[in-house]
Image (cartoon, rainbow, N blue to C red; front, side, top):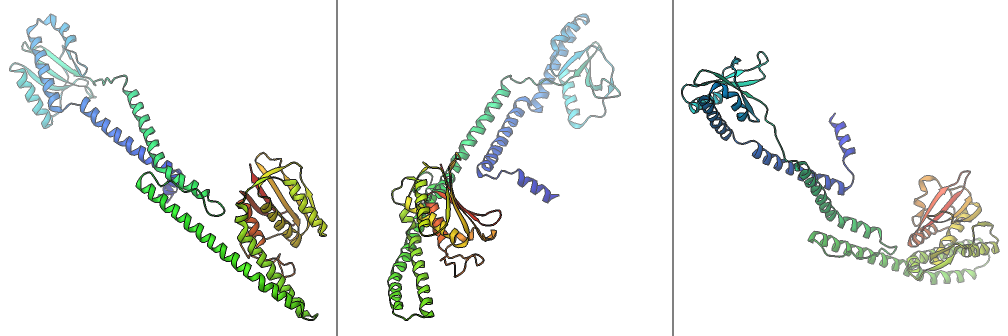
Length: 441
């Protein structure tokens, strides 16, 4: 049962820090407000027993003294004047005697008898036996006439503006709770925006290092972390670019020396290995320079013209692929980076599939989508995200004969992210793979 209650409480408990803090703070303030109001009401509407008893005894003694002095026929008119919200006088006797009194009741009755003086007898009675729900007090006047004090529930008359005042106070509590929680969680929201706005070079706008000390220290630590990450990323990219450049010269010399070998199977294998190394070096340089290329000035680019020129280049090289897309579609982008993405995607389609088609969909109101689809073996679903990692290979779809360095999709993903686009892969019905490059408006 306890586990069920915990699961239910977990479902009801809000999942945002803002709501949790608001509920806790408002509940605490509301409890303190109700407690203070209750104490004030108790003090105002419930005077102490001693004061109440003393006031009652003095009032009854005065009123009984008046009834003793006036004529019996004038007493009914005086009873209306003596009526109180808590009790009234009735000129009649009777009733069932009260059960034995508690110590406090005995003390009160003795004090009232002393206040009334000699010649007056006072006793508690039940006015509605056998229910015994209505209680009263029977007093004998000096002439022996009975007078009964009937108790009735006092009416609490509160000010008409009290509910409105309570509602205003609750609204003020809710408003200031919202303001306090908003101020407390604003630095977290600002930190989230700063983290999401990090560019492809891992650099973004620095957080202002002001405000409360805790917030300022957190902002300073975040800015320092951002600078360290960006510097380390730049350093690694520079190392990769340097190694790739240094490898080009020895590879070129090895290819020249291989040309002096006689025609043999060993020469052909050596040339293949060198070509694969040359491709790997070029892809490494492209990966290292990808962010630098995108950081250059962007411009409005005719998307149809850019892809159509690519398709024509492949057609001139004897590659078969189709292109479908409306004319006049432009996009603010870096054309060389976008061209590199399309080359990598088209190369993958041509290497590992057939019937390659490139299409542009600009009919949607929320952006532009470029698709590169083919009919081939596709990629197992569990590898669709992993293929974007550098040097990751899916053995079922890649082999030495098809080539590939394992960097093509990694470069395409890197450039797509730098262009504020989204690159995804999905298997097609009937076989094949579809790459979707989406740009939001």
